[in-house]
Length: 243
Image (tube, rainbow, N blue to C red; front, side, top):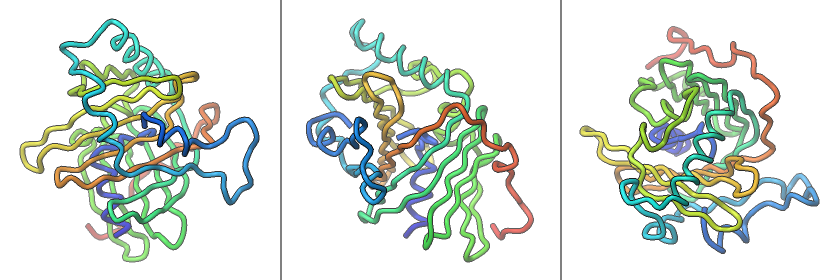
């Protein structure tokens, strides 16, 4: 089931990303920032199905208000300015199972998600391909990066209105939330919802709904955009693992 959750994340991680919901329920689950909590309670508490509170609150890109366009400009500016990022993540899969680990991003096109034990899963993008690797079984599934939403989140310059099908934009005093849709003639339509802090624009959480309607949510924290990850972390071994 961990492998299934990782594959769902590939459909719309974006995010790496990544990085990544509006409404009072999520505000209550937001991690405290003024007084650091003890390590056992440090990670956020993502919500796996937040779409019902959002859809209908935003608008399609063709009918956006000037305020919504300004919000998209802020999101584009933040995503384009972040060229390297690392931190911790918590993932809630479609079955409610909670996993966590570390992630690393290096633009353009590179990301790595390392799941803590007992999960054997790694997700790596090297700029051309994305692999979901099972270390225990020594297998990996390979996807072209160009066929995943990672392609625009890992681009040097991000323009969500140009590069994606923008579905909704919503803001309150706590979060800015963006929903984009990804249509694929073979596998169907998936949606990616990204949530950013309304004050500093840091990526907080994203939820992907796959073509079958299953949600996977990833919340990120302890973000570091100053340290540049080692490029060797994003190399994919195409020979050691079975496909």
